[in-house]
Image (cartoon, rainbow over all chains, first blue to last red; front, top):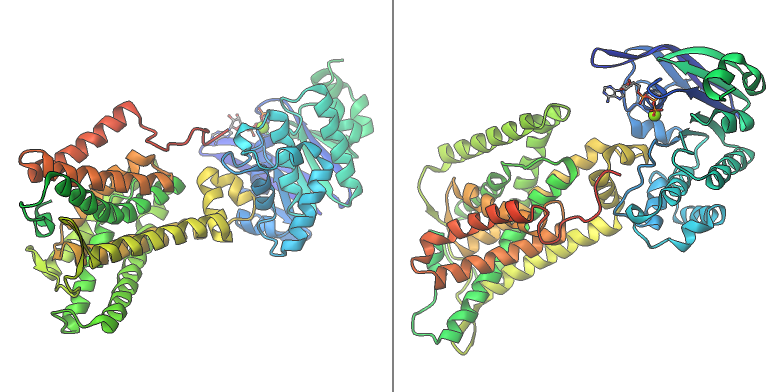
Length: 234
Length: 320
Ligand SMILES: Nc1ncnc2c1ncn2[C@@H]1O[C@H](COP(=O)(O)OP(=O)(O)OP(=O)(O)O)[C@@H](O)[C@H]1O
Ligand SMILES: [Mg+2]
């Protein structure tokens, strides 16, 4: 479904992603693990056209997306829960959810989907009229996920959705990711919480200093020595 | 403002009458300042650029609508029905001219510099301002040209306070446009795209918003409002000059900063407050005409020092 092929991404002279190859198939949950500054967020930014790769190609369902603008990439069925949530601080929860469905013109579908998000995250319903900037971190994370789902994406990408959340909320987030997959959405998940991520993922990649050093099924990665030492504290 | 002398009142009025007359003048001026201030605030809100050329965008509406009315050979009030038609025509032309110019300047001066250091687009804006002024000067010359008074000098008098029909029309046109803007930003898709882009452009793009188109639209709307202000200014002050935009632009910018730059309600509030302060300064400060601008800029400096976020500044940080 998503193919990242031989990608190099730079910030000025700073070579961040080196010869990156990642593949996400329809229906999978795939996770990308890596330490701080490994290039996880840069990978997301490259997928979504926020930074352009210098070499290599990205395709989604066979179509080149590296030549598209961010808005066109969204229109092709991808959505991102960005790092640090990035909800619109001066819009209400309801308006944030509406923004998620910006490319959808069917009001009745939007209203239905907002109700679905309220069912998925009851907290958001209670806070519907509150401006997002005053939500707690956990509430903002749920809003960011709800907002991304409002686009009805075929591929949902998430950049560290568990960051800064309490263990209970982390559990909720990961339960929700599985729920989302059951509804037919493919998931590409960037995480530092390797144990949780590998528990729900089908496959995983390990990124070190901008390079993929390891890829395998999630089950094998959980047993892998490198992964255990680097990410699972064992 | 030198040219304000034309709207001053007779000295025979009572102190209370004089005060209310100055309020009336202040509100009329404020309506025009608010329209121009909105253009500064919209653009700043969306790309954090002070569009130094905005005053000249306003000026171009005054210059072009003067040319239009001269070409039509109109030198006096044409009677009620034709007057309404003429007003609508002038507004349409003024708004179109300023919107087009503002769009063009964004496209060729600011857009190529969007990823450059902050100072670069600011200098480009100053350059655009000079270019617009110079062309207007080459076309219309360096001196004031009178705009024909197409409004009959009818009005209502309350005691000694005179409210001209023209003043009422100016305030109504301005308020209708401001209300329309508010509804547009609240309710339309493009309006929501503008708000989202102002709050977080990258996140807005991730919703599928076309950022370039949204920024263009912001310049078009800001320009159109300045264009409408230019027509109203022609009717009120009736003096057309290539350099008008510089001074009026600074006053309107002060209004935007006073209200809280980036906030459209603040720009409207700031516009009216500055209009009132100016009208009262002219009346009550000895030698007030000379002082009016100094007072306005003193206000600008004071806000920047003591309350840079302005009266209605944002409480919630932009970037979380
Ligand atoms: N806009 C930028 N300009 C220059 N360098 C950048 C920029 N963004 C990121 N980098 C650098 O690129 C490298 C990778 O950053 P990235 O944000 O992709 O890491 P990450 O894996 O997401 O880390 P974290 O887990 O801390 O979020 C870092 O060394 C970072 O300093
Ligand atoms: Mg990151």
